[in-house]
Each structure stands twice: as structure tokens, then as C-alpha cells.
Length: 326
Image (tube, rainbow, N blue to C red; front, top):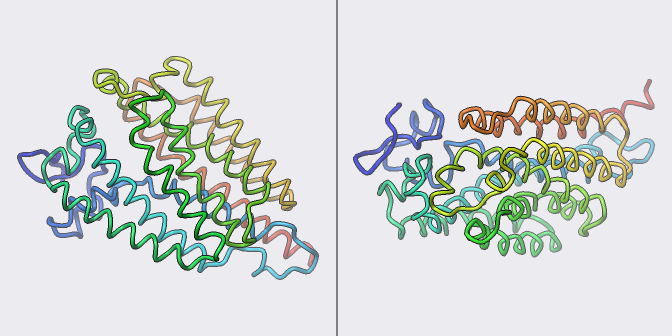
């Protein structure tokens, strides 16, 4: 289904992949809501990864000889809760962002096909859908411990202000990083009912990672953003973007390594960081900031970064459990 959505009729959003399951399996009446929640996109994974990293780091932290493997790996139940919560809260956040940015989205080529500016859903129905998604996220949050629940609620303050930041600062990606990285605190909080240095270092590193990949993403819209007065790190950095990305990605990996070291995880877990470093370096080398299609492709490739770091932590758990046997 290749038709791009507009006020003339339904279709897919301009930057959503064609042939997505949303358009193949869902009834047309559900399409605008799936688009508000970005079910036809990849981004929920980027919200999920800090959560899963944190859960895996907490499980592997401070290992002792003889610890069984099951205690060195994150709980599948915890991972499932984070998965459902990431989809629900990313959807709620995107819906809120679309409500706030309806006027801006109407003026930007890539976003004017979204359901609100294209007239496929009313603001009232969008608000109602936002509430439903937020309630789903609340149900997930209430499964966590008494320390993690209020910590999770605190993230809503950052989520609430994020859509307005692009109007006032060249650093909206920093605020996005604060919001999208919150899960780096949550996994640790669920395991230890506290926030310790490894979690803080993981959170700080994730913020830098988010700034990096969202700067790449923002280069898709920089011309339209300049016309409507939207600010971004892509516009701020311009031709110096690659140098900034090297600093952000490099800083993120160093902070991740410090988090791992502070949690006393085994050295083999660092292999995931090495692989992630190679991957992010390739992103920087390949980047053409004036090619929107390539920018979107490189942005999406950060899902691989998430997998590499998570796999390294799982590998560290396996190493710790099996080492006494070899």
C-alpha cells in the first residue's frame, strides 16, 4: 500500500515503511491510532533498550562465584513488562507530541501526512487514545516495586515539556535523551530499590547516545525546520555534525564502560561495547547529512547498537556461570 496519506484520503505516513503489518492486518479505522502511536515505526525499540540494558546490568552486577545462571540474567517477566511499557508509553508520548505539534507538522513535508494534520483523526479522539495508552503504561508500572513506581512517574515531567523544547532551544535532543533514557534507571531500581552509580552512569551514557542518533534523524527535516523556526542539534551542528557525533557516541560508550566497571560485571560483557563502538563509527563515516533517506537508515541502525550492548551483558552472565566449569 504505497499511497501517502493526506486530507484527500487514507494511506501510510510518508516516512513509514511500505507493506508494514499495520496496513496489512489492521482495519482502516484503526490506522490513524496506530500512526499516532507509531506502531508503523521502529522507535519504540530505542525506548526499550535502556530499560533492558539496565535490567541486564542489575542482574549481572556484583557477581559471586557459584551464582546460578538464572540469577545472572534479567528476569523474562521484567523484560516483558519493559517491552509492553515501552510500546505503550512511547505511543502515548508520540500521540502527545503530535497533538502539541499539529501546526508544525502541517508545515513539514515529512510529517504533514500524520493523522492529525491530514485530518484522519480529531484532536478529541487523539486525547482519548493518549489516555488509554497512558493507563496501559500505568498498569505496567504498578507491577514494579515501591521505589521504581514513583521514579517512573517522575519521568512524565520530562515527557510533558519535550515537545515545546524545539521552540526555545537548539538542544531538544538533550531533553529527548533525558526522557528516552529513563529506563536506564528503572531496571536497576526494580532490582535494588535504589539508584546507584552504575545506573547513573548508564543513564548519562544513554542520554549521549540519544542525542547522537536523534541528531542524525533531525537532519531529515532541517530545511523545513529552518522555515518554520524549529530548532535542533542538526541545525546547530551543521557541517560539524560528524565531529559532534564522535564526541557523543564516544562519550556514551565510555560512560557505559564505567557503568559496567562500577557494577563489577565480568570483562567479556565489554565485548558488546566494542562491537557497538565499531557500529557507531561506521555510522559516522557513512553519514551524508544531506541525504534524508540515508539519515533515516542510519538512525534505524541504532537498534543494532541496542542488541549488541544487551547481548554483551547476556554473554557476561553466561561467562560468569560457565567459567567455573572450564
